[in-house]
Length: 80
Image (cartoon, rainbow, N blue to C red):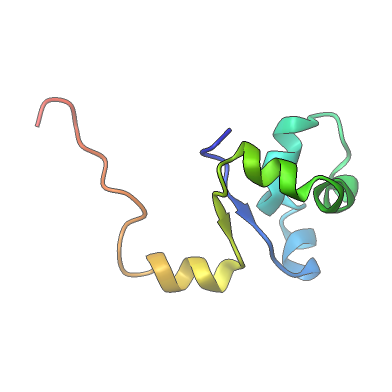
C-alpha cells in the first residue's frame, strides 16, 4: 500500500472528488461509504500513514508546487 498517496485537503476538494484524496482508506475498507471516509481517516491516521510509509501531501497546492514543471518519477524502460 505504500504507493497510495494521501492528500489532506479541505472539505470542498474532498467532497468534489468523493474523498479520493484519502484513497488508502478505501483500500483498507472497500465497502465503507465515501462520506464516512474522513472520520475513519481521522480515527486511524497514524496507522494508515505507517502503512503507506508516509506517502503524504499536505494539499493539492503542495503537489502543484513540487510537480507542476517536473515529473513525479522518471520510469526507465527495460530495453532502453
